[in-house]
Image (cartoon, rainbow, N blue to C red; front, side):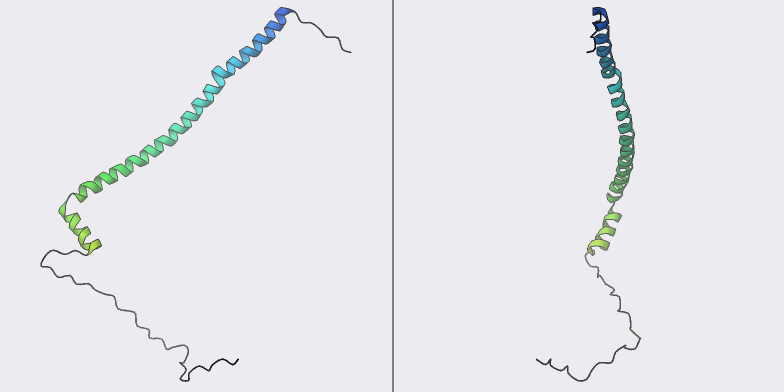
Length: 118
């Protein structure tokens, strides 16, 4: 059997303090650093989202100002809802179906179809 060497008390205490110190260093520096890096990455993504939202907000504000005018409301009412002012007559142009000038590819049968045999 191998002999077991007894370490002096101060050596055991030094080993325990080193292990506890290593754990303390990890808790104090490594994990917060990882959290900080993750937060920096998330900040970049959030800034891009904020820019997108700001662009959309400015477009919506411009649309809102434009919709406050009577001309825009009238244009939308006429185009989308077909509304007219009192006394006006609305005319709707219906597109004509295209003419099929090509001769038919099959000749129609003048005889009625035969019943199926049983």
